[in-house]
Amino acid sequence: MYKKVILLVILAVTCLEVKAQTVAQHHIDLTWTDSNSVGVTSQNIYRAVGNCATVPSSSFVVVGSVSGTATSFSDTTVTQTPPAGGTSYCYAITAVNTGGESVFSNLSQAVLLPFPPPPNPPTNLITKPF
Image (tube, rainbow, N blue to C red):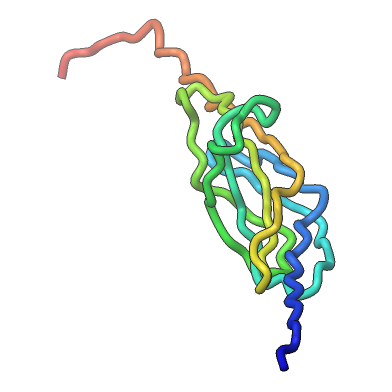
């Protein structure tokens, strides 16, 4: 006699209210609210270059992973393109448990601060012989 076995896999629920905030020219901090999903073992941080409204989902790459209970991440690997500043980065987070990886959280965007302009060259210089 055979018995039917039903296997139920429950995926983790992703975090809520992801917020990205520019800290410096090469530093963006992410914070979020824990989803309280049971069994979350880790969370993956995804990033794409560009505006969240137009960036394709295929552009996202994993830039970090944190514990299942973490609610923040610092991205210090961002760079200006071009160096003048204004580069936009779009972030999403997923939760991972034994059932697999959740769908993306909400998307959150941060724009890098521009570098300050170089100082003006000195004027009225007087040269003296040695």
